Amino acid sequence: MRPDAHYSVLVVEDDPNHSLLISLAFAHGAPSAKVHLTQRAEEAITYLLGLRAASKSDQVALPDVIVLDISMPGIGGIGFLQWLEHQQDWTQDIPVIVFTSSDDPNLARRCYSLGAREFKEKPADFGELVELVGRVLRRWRPQDQGELGVSS
Image (cartoon, rainbow, N blue to C red):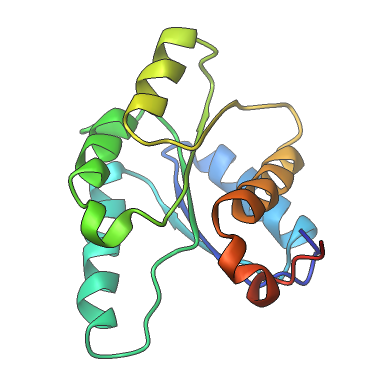
């Protein structure tokens, strides 16, 4: 993914330090990417439902990718994946990257079974997330490659 790639990312992360690091990683690695931060799964659901309602009357687009933490208050990342799985008629084309502190293979399997496209343990260098988002978008959204600024 080139740094001038245009895409939007919904980040669901309750740790303000991690949110800041993710924002900085995108600002440096993909400055044209539009990043929307939410702190809880419920906030992300409200945001997506608002975009869906607005997209029926305007040219408002859903995010190109969702970066999701798992351990959060409320319904958490698993609850969000379960909700998203039941919204398939309008969310099926949004890849979800689980970005978590856990390296539990059982958790990874559960996330994949609920529709996550990638499961990544949080690295020391959050710039790896930007590269992973680019790879996921190239793999799961090939119809948008020209629009995303992706070179073959």
